[in-house]
Image (tube, rainbow, N blue to C red; front, side):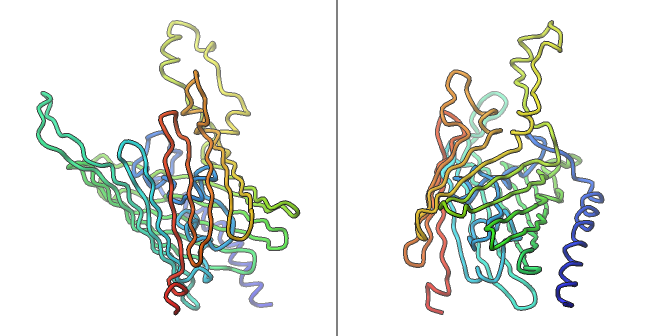
Length: 355
């Protein structure tokens, strides 16, 4: 009975703690569309998440590749798990991450991750266009995640991020954190998560007196496995800190200069609502093979070409297990020019080496 009251107090007390943390942090503004720095923190690393639309999910099935975006899923059952992910992005850009989990009695479970993006090599030229050599650009984040179950249904977690960015001769570093809470009901095969992402600030800006904000975001996710159908549905609400995410093409606005601004069509309620929604699904073919699909409405609206929509905004992938290894692959269509490939490999080092 005492344990129950203690857990209930923690669950109730966590809410005002999060609210106070938000209010006292002077970096928390609704920032999207290039108005913040370290945007690489929002890149989808896991192939499973990429196939489901590109955002975090709440399902508790001990997949370590999900935990870099949702630390409240970190638990003692993934102790010894390790995962590697690689993404062949656009224009010779590649990125990925590696993560390892370890649990300790009475303290909780931890997941240490390294996240990186390599932008490649560029020609360096002066203002006259004369080539002066070349330069590189890259960004890194060292992420230490912690998670712990409050009881059989609730769990909490947090990420601490140390961020470094090098763009030619411009250097910057900062610190950030994620705070998450999850609810899971085993009988109903239902789970949900709430996360406050990228709370923090630059410690050193690229240029003096030009501090930028981190890409703060509030997200909420639901996952539900159907009773009589081998299918799991995922629903994510993104950017809950800002209602209107719609984008007005400046070329279109320029074309109607001289006309009344009232003639420019405004986004309606449905479009504003759907701009927050990402939907994904998993067909659980058997215990070792899964097929995945996803749809990101806002990505489709922002990246589509009017003459040919194609599959922009859609994603797909699959996962399979061989022996002690889990392999996941995905393709996500951002634009007509191509679709990035996502590859993730996971295993447990204890079982792999017979410990």
